[in-house]
Image 1 (cartoon, rainbow, N blue to C red):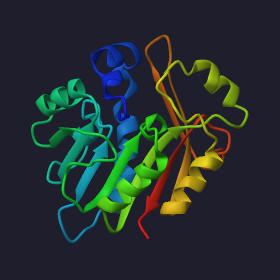
Image 2 (image 1 turned 180 degrees about the vertical axis):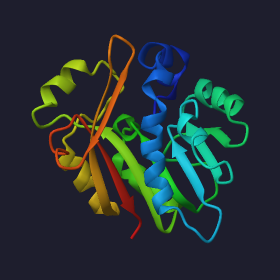
Image 3 (image 1 turned 90 degrees about the vertical axis):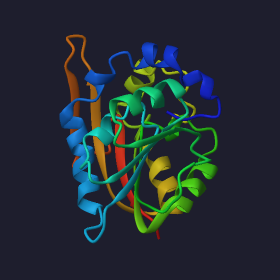
Image 4 (image 1 turned 120 degrees about the vertical axis):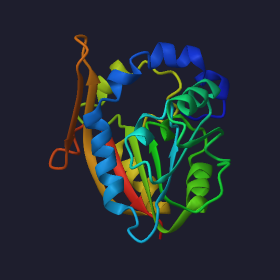
Length: 218
């Protein structure tokens, strides 16, 4: 997670909003994310990847350990735990507009992060500045339009969501700063019985409650 108010994302936040962190990040979900970054990773060198809003490092833990893996989050609670769980990666407490690691990165990811960030302009500039030429930025955001929009509003109890926007807004935001390569529709929800639904679609991507967008630096 990342936000100007970093204190909002410490232990209490995770215990309230992401108390089922492991169930909300099942292997099949992380394999989908990995399949995208594997596809665009450079073949002639060891890839460098940065996961913004890394939380406890679940996504980075599913990548090839030979990669140079970096994670950042505004939560000290999260990065301390991530470092213990994944000592082979490098973690830091930092805001998205002040990325502390030297670039460039071949891939930057932000899963359910940028809807929390006050300045989307500063966010785009910060990420652009750390990407390698033709580097890729992959992000996931909830969307509040279409037939599922009212349901997303109803189920969204996260008060730190600052940008409750449509998919068209996010695609336009991305296209202003990067080249949009591909995007998918996502349906994900933790059922009361403990099973986490994670469905990916391209044909129905204009009707899903979340989207994943793969972009490339121009």
